[in-house]
Amino acid sequence: MKKYDSYKDSGIEWLKEIPKGWNLARMRYVCDISTGDKDTINKEENGNYPFYVRSKNIERISTYTYDEEAILTPGDGDICKIWHYINGKFECHQRVYKLSKFSEVTGKFLYYFLMQNFENEVFKLSAKSTVDSLRRPMFQNFPIAFGTIEEQNIITYFLDNKTTQIDDLISKKEQFIQLLEEERIAVINQAVTKGLDVNVSMKDSDIEWLGEIPEHWEMKKLRLIGNCQNGISAGAEYFGKGFPFVSYGDVYKNEILPILVNGLAQSNEKEQLHYSIDEGDVLFTRTSETIEEIGISSICFQKIKGAVFAGFLIRFRPNEGNLNKNFSKYFFRSKIPRTFFVKEMNLVTRASLSQELLKRLPILLPPIEEQKKIGEFLNKKTNEIDDIVGKTRNEIELLKEYKSALISEVVTGKVDVSTSSTQALGTKN
Image (cartoon, rainbow, N blue to C red):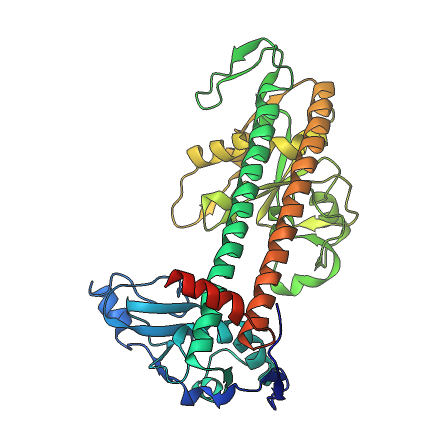
């Protein structure tokens, strides 16, 4: 893409040069800045507003009252992000800013301009730690560079088309990742419930949702192959210094427990022995707001010397020779524990996994050598899938960066898209 014929200094450090024929104005001169209806919450509760836009849920769009062109951005919460350009009917919360009644600029051009520049520049002007709400002067004094209405229409037409193409490509890659993640789950579930030999003789597991399992596999309750221990509970003064402390997050976020954990606790030798973390141990999340976060496991591959673990966790320590740690890593994050916990757990106000429930968990036990083979197979397959997922996520990030850079270059006049867009507009008209 080519540049404009000539440029001038904008006098704004972050904006730098702008095309010579462009204007520069503070935002208060190009649009009206207002907030939504202070009675929105009450009206919604009374059934008058089935949908509305609010600061912490601004993705919800209504087709209710106003009928106008507007830009919406939160006044608190996720501030400084330009969320919506709307040309139609909507309602918004009192803590949402509405930009409307545009003069000299089109709403769509201003949307692109602010989307790329507003958040970064506002945070540069005010320390992020102190900016918890978006104040009107931040909007009113923000500088806007723009060309003629015709130029703005050309730019927005170009960006509408280009960003749609990029977003479509990103969406396809995200769908591809979802398929890969579903494949990963399916491969794990198949291997830990049916084994690797497709010709093996099968038997009924006597569990309806599990179906058949290999005939030579054992199935036992967890209580028969090891022991359970709840984590340590103590006051706030106990934590923050001392010895390694395995937290809820260490378990929830990791299939394999990190060797180096961030938490510290002032544990003594007796506590370190009682709440120890040894190779082969399986830690489970014990309590949460939802069933979906209960019973998530993490396997210890290497003893964490001097460590204790949180009271929100349960440690399962298998008897020696029962479970291969690679097999455990996949089995305890397979569909079996998840399905069992959801079916058996009684959710009142907060989900909680008791030792008694965990001890009733059915465990499939192939011979130990077969467990090793299953673990090795799944390591290879999941690593292959994870590599593809990682590369695809990197591609998505590059596309997002390209989209961001493209909008910034075009909307601030660093490149001239008039030739291609004018031809396309002419064809369209």
